[in-house]
Amino acid sequence: MYAVNDSNFEDIAIRLFRFQAENSPVYNRYLQNLKVNPFKIEKIEQIPFLPISFFKTQSIQTGSWTPEVEFSSSGTTGSLTSRHAVADLNFYLRHAEKTFEQFYGKLQQYHILALLPAYLERKGSSLIAMMDHFIKKSGSEHSGFYLYNHDELVQKMEVLKSSSRKILVWGVSFALLDLAEHFEVDLSNAIVMETGGMKGRRQELTRQELHTFLNQRFNTAVIHSEYGMTELMSQAYSTGNGYYQIPPWMKVVIREINDPFCYVRNKSGGVNVVDLANFHSCAFIETQDLGKITEAGELEILGRIDNSDIRGCNLLVE
Image (cartoon, rainbow, N blue to C red):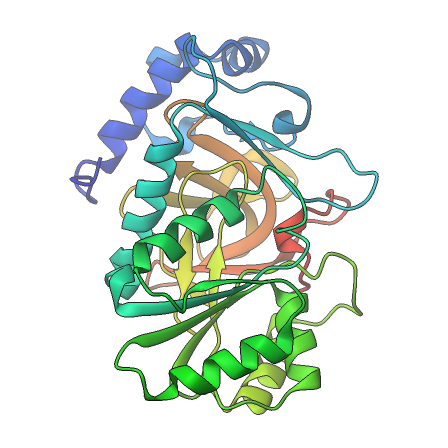
């Protein structure tokens, strides 16, 4: 899969679409209801994307296999959460590692400090599985998870200031905000990665407001961001400008808000994701995120589509 590039992406995607259209019972029924003949689909823009809400009520699998693990979204109290059956946990972890290293280099270069309360307190988080793998792969005795123990985290960052390794502080948005409100700490030599997730705990901020405040309190020039979701296998990363770089095995197309089968260019709309790593479930997902593609081919997330369900890692107003 890592040989995917611009020249062969569409061909691979079309072949995968036809395979999933035939071998995924849920996707197959969805396409039948739309009266779509998979063998008449020749371009990505002709593919009907599966609404992400199906993951809340259906088991989305291509072929017959027993899940090794099931990831679930965090959501809010009382809300119906998405569930993503994963055939091979090791593949997910290695793929997440490959995606991260595509943009940031080897994990062994980092001390990784993960500030992920709430996610640590529940089962089935794909983010926790990914971060646990990253922490282990870093090989650093200083890497680890932090719950609400901000004092310990601040002390650890002070100890690591003189380290030859890079420091990566990876946190859910509300936890980074809590840390910044209680401590003014110098993280100018660290990468601060926020992964969304206000979770209705705090007054909503725009991402720009959040990043501006974090930069002031942490003495950083930029705040990095990760864009991922339970229903996908791949992630996109922003290195601080608010625009997400998309790995070669992932593609985003933008749809009209009021017409899911009409695609737009150079304007905002609903985000549809092709994730070739999702070959065991469904690689063609219609999200409820609002976004646009820049001239440089990067993804800008603008928020949530009106009246869509609030999903755990994306509870951040844009």
